[in-house]
Image 1 (cartoon, one colour):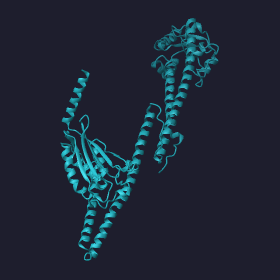
Image 2 (cartoon, rainbow, N blue to C red):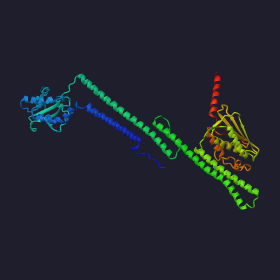
Image 3 (cartoon, helix red, strand yellow):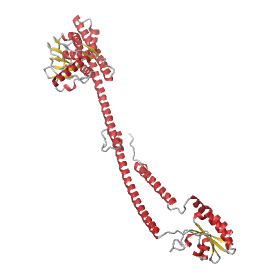
Image 4 (cartoon, one colour):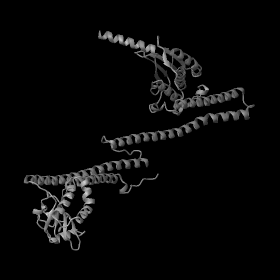
Length: 528
């Protein structure tokens, strides 16, 4: 039998469950971070604003710079800035024109930057025109809301090498009161604390779940080891059934299956042992009469003329008896095999057990004559009819009577007794003999097939021909037939004092109803 090897760690249940959990955790945290980044921390108020700043701002501001002239009339520049500012006002954009020396020239109406920002260093403006300039950097680190820090685009007016001025676009300043700044600071602190708490909770949850996964995996591994040992031949291997979850249920199912399989294997072993014993017993039971047949047939064929008529008759009687024994042995084997296979169905019907017993006793009288054994039947008056299979019951009675005759002493007796139980719901049937009895060591085995007990009980020279040998099948058949009728064949015996076999048959439904009515009447009378 091939044994299964332990899988690589990457293919174990704990690795797969852990990987799935960590992947789901990473997707969840990543998705949450992206959602926070795109909503709470996004610099844009909506998609239109994001689209303008990300894709359209540079081209539109470049086109605006071409229409401006710092040395031209202020009215022209104001109108041009006003038209553009009106279109992008809802994006929070402010526009301003600086001259070649960095002085403020004009601003969009409503921005009021002309008075707030009189000038900007030209070196900073030239640096901001460079495509490599990072507008996320802070030129004025001391003031986050400084005008220089809010600029997001600088375009030259005129020639880039010698510009006549600069068009500067910036975000509107954020105006907050002291109370709002305090609330904002408190929210930031709360958010940081919440992030720490969530981080600790996620780590603890991950650690706890990994422990649970490891515990679950170890339980599954123990179950797998037990199943591997069981399939390897250790039929006594079981797992602990502690718990009420699915794995515990699986363990209980495994233990139940293992017990069932073990019982089946034990039953198969018993059947195999029985088959071996059956073959041995059949060989023994067939060998003896066959040897006797061969000896007498050879004697008759070789010395037929030399034998006297009495000797010939005795040889023929012996041959006939052996043939009858073989015939009964085969017949009983067939009956027992049909009972084992469930093919000998019971067909119950109502009949008189007294009449059936009388006919069976009469059939067995000639068997008792050679040994001077008397057959007696004692039947209680007014016995109820029984509900049973008369053919099968007759077979049981005949086997018990023949058994009592076969193992009786000369001039002994066999008594068949019939009596109703106290409630008249059953009829008790007893067959008692005055033979040598059954040894205590043999009592537990007398209903086993082919069990013959003491060798001295298996052959009787003075008995009728077909009773000289015991096959050990009669009582086994009788016990199975009685069991099929819902009762148990019991025996009482002491060595040297004979044996008594008893069993019960159910009374008919009519008698049972009468018994129930009688019992009910007695109960009512007692209560009254």
